Length: 135
Image 1 (tube, helix red, strand yellow):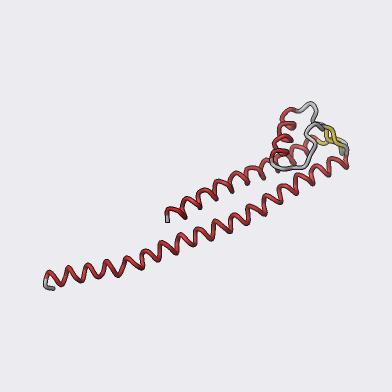
Image 2: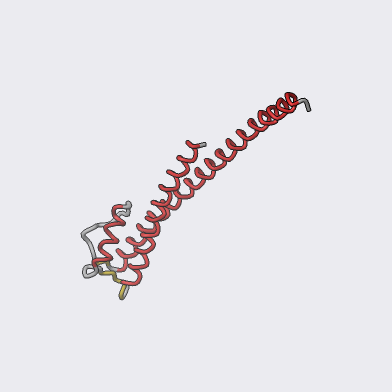
């Protein structure tokens, strides 16, 4: 039970980390949309957006980290790359949630099995104690 509990906890931590990445990628898309003017995106004067783009690069988004000005077509490709990475992470999150559900079910079944095994032992002890007491 302790092994399963530790495994569930580590899976949850990994899931939380990946979900934080997805949240940041969504925040980046919102920021890009907000900073877009005339279908062009330029963040050369915006350090916060530069930092978000650098983080996205760390999370696996395919982009040029030295490019900060995008025309309409390049901007659409950038957003599509961010969405693809976000979708990939969401698929991994769904798979990991299934793993967590399976582990939780295994833990519950193990606990139930242990209870099922212990109940007859407990009843046997009570019956022996009654027999010794002469009841």
